[in-house]
Image (cartoon, rainbow, N blue to C red; front, side, top):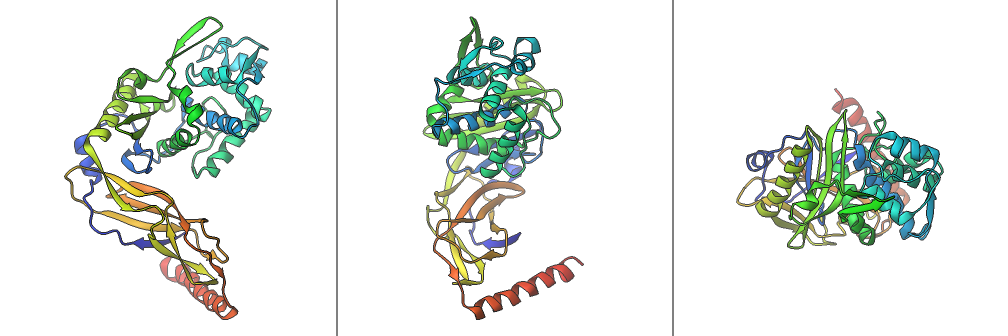
Length: 387
């Protein structure tokens, strides 16, 4: 991995110490993110891996929403509640369930409500089997989809959040996944915010406590598993700004709800946006091996902004990060790097950067020169930097 420094200049920024002074949390893993800019406003052990419990159902929903958007399935189509779905996720399991009957055919729209409102494990398994044939195959599809979405560390093995040492996520990646779901599937995201659902004459309330707090919350999921504690991924909107909070490792359901509420209110009331670059504005350049030209300017497709505590005065540090060497040809619009901004020890922003122009393959002398430079660089990294 190559790193290139970006000159950002002095900005009023809040360091991690400033965060701690203004908001506290008892949960082990926490992140607060602005959904539009994907700027991180607060974090605590945000990259630590843990079991997601039932918040894994957000990824289950993503795969189903994608299939609906692409026309592969419809809301009126039905999936069967198999023996596995009924026994492991239904009434006999004594876990969270929509209480679908064995061998019954359930409309996909009802399965979505069972999944997201009731947190039904039977609904999750039925969706997994309906889309991929088996839950095991669906778990593999979940992990592949995570990589496609840029979630590099999350891995999944099952659709409903069953304890498994190979099923791990971080709160940072769960927040990023949730932002994707909200922005990509607005017609289906609404199901997360419905407050109750009745199936087989059994009425259940949505398990998300934020929906009852009158703070603009409109969705996502809770979870609880012995090995990692109580978890929640929630989102709220105030004055057209959407924040996403993700917590795990909370000791009680009350801690989970109160910490999420405090963080959302703190984010809305104590932070202000700082614009750094317009969409499409050149942020820096990245060298291209064997290219003509030798460097390509990069930019973000969205406006680059961060949210900072009001009245504080620390610096943001920025780097363009890319896997190198980048080899020509490169097409305009291709994502080739990421912009990472840090505030103290905390990651403030991590977004993709695109090439602003085409880079053709350079002349033979150009490629030979670049090969020599790359070889010299490899030797320096091998024999000098490792000593």
